[in-house]
Amino acid sequence: MAERLQNFVDGNWRASSASQALDVINPASAQVLAEVPLSPATDVNAAVERAERAFLSWRRTPVVDRVQPLFKLRALLEQHRDELSLSITNECGKTLAESKAEMQRAIENVETACAMPILIQGANCEDIASGIDEHMIRQPLGVVAAIVPFNFPGMIPFWFLPYAVAAGDCFLLKPSERVPITSQMVFHLVREAGFPAGVIQLVHGGREAVNAILDHPGIRAVSFVGSTATAKYIYSRAAASGKRAQCQGGAKNPVVVMPDADLEMTTRILADSAFGCAGQRCLAASVAITVGDARSGLTERMAAAAKGRKVGYGAQAGVEMGPVISAESKTRIEGLIAKGEHDGARVLVDGRGPKISGYEDGYFILPTVLDDVAPDSEAARTEIFGPVLSLMHAQTIEEAIALVNGRSYGNMACIFTTDGANARRFRYEVNAGNVGVNVGVAAPMSTFPFSGWGESFFGDLHAQAHHAVEFFTQTKVVVERWPKEWSRKF
Ligand code: NAD
Image 1 (cartoon, helix red, strand yellow):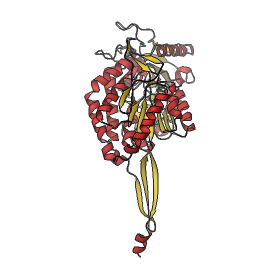
Image 2 (cartoon, helix red, strand yellow):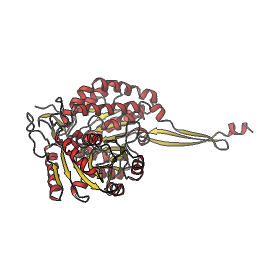
Image 3 (cartoon, helix red, strand yellow):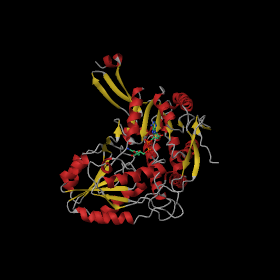
Image 4 (cartoon, helix red, strand yellow):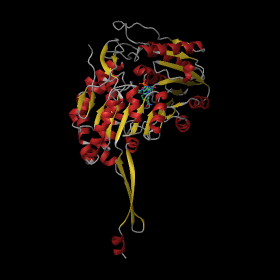
């Protein structure tokens, strides 16, 4: 029987009191890896109660001491990077190289948060009025929680966790119930790193655990990453109970290819963006808009790149793309390809229904290219979240930018060009928070905020870097006068 995962509460592993559980499945083989409990509200409440107690002394711990276990955690993540990466590949499906790159991003976020003694500094102004000084101090909020998606189980918790605890908050993680094993492994390292009991906790679960987090009066802020529908729900329910919320949603990312672009390089980068992680990245290119003469050159090259990609179990040498997350996801994606065809697109490369030798039960779809996709069709507007690239064609950069700006999502937009004026115009005019110029996955490094716009983000302060510091702290302004001192001067 598969191992049942446990929650990590008050510095110890605890069995969840859940009566229900789900199988965690390797999407390449359909093999059951573990069983994840769907923790009830009582489990969340117990964790919050411990966190509230831990906060009393954690917030009084000097910031230079709070970052010490983070330095240790950074070293442990590095030391265990290979096991963590294999776990990501096994529960999420991506290739081992992609999993290792993901862990690198997690580590970098810990490194950035270790600068908290500088990042948390406030501001002051002496003599803002005669004999009056004013100071702005940053103080932690209390207990905060993060609810995360399936597609980056190793990285996304680290968009929040290190900043929250370095800022002096106590942090609760609710991982995706589809990929909870990597979080379980990370929490063994959290324990070894030596954080005081209750400062960082893990509660597995689904909707009930999420709702308990959203409604709990003791949780001050919620960070969320997932689909747009869930992001909207979390944002409004968190706000209804007076919490801060930062909710990153889904995406549909366009890439414009100008006629002056280097088409060999563009095809290679674009194919990696569209088909890397089997298209299950919120920064995956999902629509390519060619301008003018770029059309034929890019279309032919992209078809060849899609056909040439080696698909299989992500831990096997030479595999360039793994499966999608679940049987339901595979069915949904294949349905959207069929819908695209029905709406008039040409299926240039059809990846539906493959059999991968040795992994016949896996949830595989091969890279797929749809050509002549109509801008208002479902294939052009819906987040497919699979290895499907839709091609559209425009005559001018104005037309291409209008297509980019005509969609509701705003996670990323990219341009491929060798003309600086085109690049600047694109950067200036597009409605997207993460912009790439000759880059296919414009993922901000940990020292910059992950800046989704539109239907891709609900809130104001994003994940990572200075935004995370602001999100996890509240400002206090002190206006100060010392009459004796002031009168002494005159
Ligand atoms: P999801 O919305 O299904 O689930 C995300 C989390 O929300 C999970 O922890 C899940 O347990 C919880 N959840 C799901 N439905 C819920 C409900 N009805 N009530 C309460 N909780 C609920 O997302 P997913 O399928 O795990 O992840 C893929 C999505 O995440 C894609 O849309 C992708 O674009 C998006 N994503 C966005 C970013 C970004 O930075 N904008 C990054 C990664 C992924």
